[in-house]
Image 1 (cartoon, rainbow, N blue to C red):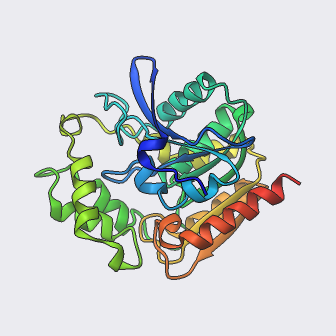
Image 2 (cartoon, rainbow, N blue to C red; image 1 turned 45 degrees about the vertical axis):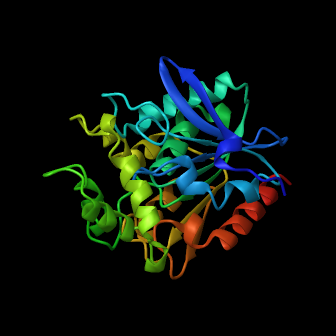
Length: 281
């Protein structure tokens, strides 16, 4: 297995005056694009470091840092605007000469992936979506416990390491995964000076995703993945998506939170590989 590291796969490209950072393994007939979630300090590598090297054995894997995240630029406008992120990523994919790709999307990245399936269906093959944002829960009270904690991170007195720890701990079932090193890395990323400038939240497109799916049929083959103990976007939010997405299947991991791709990395990688392979028959 080739040793794919952060440094060896790191790339940058200018899209409409924005520097977008991404990872690219560059080898493989089929393309798999990974889109990260929207939690504080998130990035492509932090979300997918346990998955990219493994799945790169079969696919050309790319993982994008959204604007405002990772090493991408952090403009004053369009913070967490998934429609805007989808437009930027579509232009990036076009610039790279990629005609079609499979997508893995975690949380906000799942919303972006489904948005692309609606707005640029020519680019989108199969989809693997982990706890995608944009569908109401059926049993769990809204707003969920996790969303409240995440939304509070930049509010009030502003970011603190205590708020960051609460936001990260709500993501996982296995609390032993939360190390001082992880918290330090995520807090540094989440408190980049450009992110501390006051800006308007533009994440409304995440909230009405399910309503847009009612009027735009998405026929792609889709695997929905949730952690049974996800306190951010619980598994019962999948029920409306299963009704609206005719070719969607559901897998729920026990003893797992919002980061299925990390907490259940080995099982996740096998599940994704099998799903994509079966769809290519």
